[in-house]
Length: 546
Image (cartoon, rainbow, N blue to C red; front, side, top):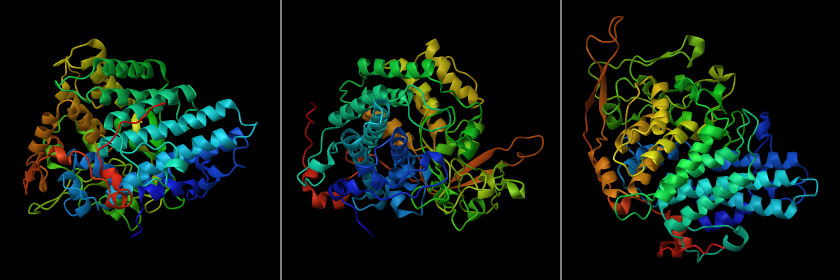
């Protein structure tokens, strides 16, 4: 297998691999290598087409398997008992030789590198015909992407090297890591710049970033940053206020709106909908790396995909996720994980829809397989789709996240809150899920709400990171109580009839629990990186900001 190294990767990114153009106008872009060519930056349209590549291929290796292993596996939302690589994540035994570890590290640093190259080339090669507005927009997109990439790096690996100039730093094998505080400050500065550089609005349905996309992500960054360095279990009020400020700005002043029906969020027909602040723009029928591979890996069978893939029959919701779900929360559960007897008219439409098989009464184990991001055959998606090339977006942030950020920032360091503003947006998320509104909530309630709103979107671990920064023992206790073993699902006798709603029981087969120790909170740096740049193992140093 080809092994990438950070130092090499950051250096050779100056001649990035190409993407074949496709019929979708948004990704009708010349090869990425053209981004380094002086003759490319001639017009606003060329620059806009060129930056489209940042929404797609460079994220490929951090999507799919790694999205779930990193975000939902460690948080206890999923089980994958027969995949040795993914097992390491939810057992907290990740090796520095893990393939998904290496791929994700490379993917995030390739985003950083591409952003750096683009910023340099816009400033160096843009022709007089390119407007200042177009240059500001391109640089704003690059800084947004770089800041988001660093937010994932710092939450997964902790201290990492800050790279701003690939020509000067790309081949430096003496590179040191920078402190967690420095990396967060760098990411926040990137998003602060992006909000000022990006246009206030973008065409509906275009999927392009705007200033409110940056403000929504900035609210998330400030909320997470608020607990870092806490010594008394409290969060910084200054950062909480900043999170509240930017979240409120997005809620009150942007054009983003919640989708009315939760399951509709995950239909390809609703790509780039009113709730999406930022989503990865996957396209089907293109070259390797441009389509969404998630369905191939996690669909329960090939009947659902229409191809030879659908390799996810041995994966699904964790026992802990299922037994802690509110039985009334059926709308989100059904849109996220499949249970026996569930019917999905949007899948396999040519045969009248898909009904989840009911397991035999004596089956030892079965799983609540994935539904979210499982979009079906090409016939279900207007002819779009190939094996490992589904056309559905991957959400990085949607307005529901901003609503709950706002509510959490108001909650702050209080034991609970009944603040009307916090409740308004907290309950808006619940009511869309057809759940009753509440009169108050605490941090445990909010974490529960986030868990079931964003499961399978790769967010759950980062919610725990935010909590760990100021209450590490609470996170250790949460993880230690989760049961992550194999299980079987049964329909309760006497339910699932015309007069009685189907109810389920979950039977644990292997009641496994795993302990999170502080030394395993951050992932190890891939061995291929430390072998070439051993200084990455030294104590991190503060970054020198200009």
